Length: 230
Ligand code: PRP
Image (cartoon, rainbow, N blue to C red):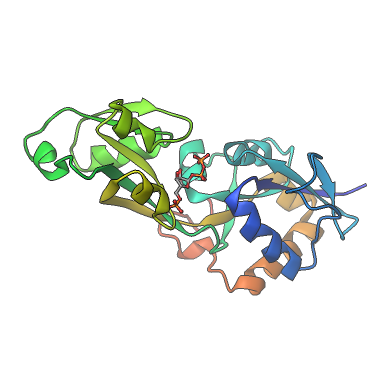
C-alpha cells in the first residue's frame, strides 16, 4: 500500500517529469502515456502516481488527495496557491506566457488610443492582473483550449497563452506583442503531508533538488520564508 501519492500533469509536461522522476529512482510500472489506468504503481512500493489534467493537480494536492504534485506556474497562479507548499522550481516545462495577436492587428495603436480590447485566454486571473498593472482595461473572454483560433475567428483581438517553440503561433499567423512572464513547473506539497509523511516527502524534495540543481523557491521573490506564495 503506497504511503505517498504524486499527482502529475498529462500532456507535454509529463514527458519532462517522467525522466526527472526516473533520475531519483521513481519509475511507473506501466507507461502512463500508453495506459488508461489513473493510478499507477511505481518501482517504489511506497509511491504511486496519479495522472491528471494540469488544472486539477493543485486541487488534488490542496485537499490532500495527492501528497505531492508537479504543476506549471501558469496553473498555480490561476489556482491561487492556497494551501500549497512550493519548495522547488523544477526548471522543466519551460515556456513563456505572452500576449499575441494577428500579424495585421495594430496592438500598439489600439493600446495607445485606449481601445476596448477583447482578450481570450484560459489564464483569466493572471491576464487580469497583467493588464491591471499596466492600467489597461480589457474585456477578458474565458476559453479552455485552442486559444489561437479566437483572433482568427473574430472572437477576440488578442490572446494570452503559453508559447514554447512558437510553432502554433507561426502556423496561425499570430505574433507575440507582449511578454507576460516566464513559466516553469514547480513541485507542490500538501502541508499536512509534509508533516505526517516527512520521512518520505523530505528526501523526495531533497532528491529532486539535487537531481536538477533546481533553485528553492526561497529565491522566488513571490515566495515568503516558508516557501509559500501569498
Ligand atoms: C499549448 C499552448 C499553445 C501551444 C504552444 O497548448 O496553449 O497552444 O502549447 O506551444 P508551441 O509554442 O510549442 O507551439 P497545448 O498543446 O499544451 O494544449 P492545450 O491547448 O490543451 O493547452
